[in-house]
Length: 190
Image (cartoon, rainbow, N blue to C red):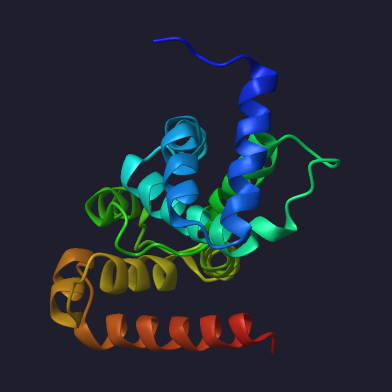
């Protein structure tokens, strides 16, 4: 199959665009047959999906039909003009949200990136609180610090704490109560 020379092709496409501007449907069909493969390739290269390229190309040919009268031979070659329509329409398409597009792929990627853990601000606040608690715990008497740590960080009850520390229950309760009061004062800054 012989292809027309580039100048002859450009002249033929310009003629077809002029005929489309006059509403000639057969000229539009010929224009489509002559340019669709190339323009589809452009759309696929930009969009990376054939289904999207098909949708965009359909919109582009509607635009070509509606704006064929706007084409000016003096400004650009016909295929250049049509390619710019496809390119711009593809870029517009990429800017739009496409929730249906590859929703399974999107869900997989979103799931991989999803993190239910604390964010940076929460981590910073928790670190600051932990540092303040460590500083205040360091200011307690050793028996108060030990009883609070065993009670709150290891989950021992008062009676278990008394047995573990080999001290009377009342003494252990007093250490815990007084230690908590000092912690509260230290953490509140009083």
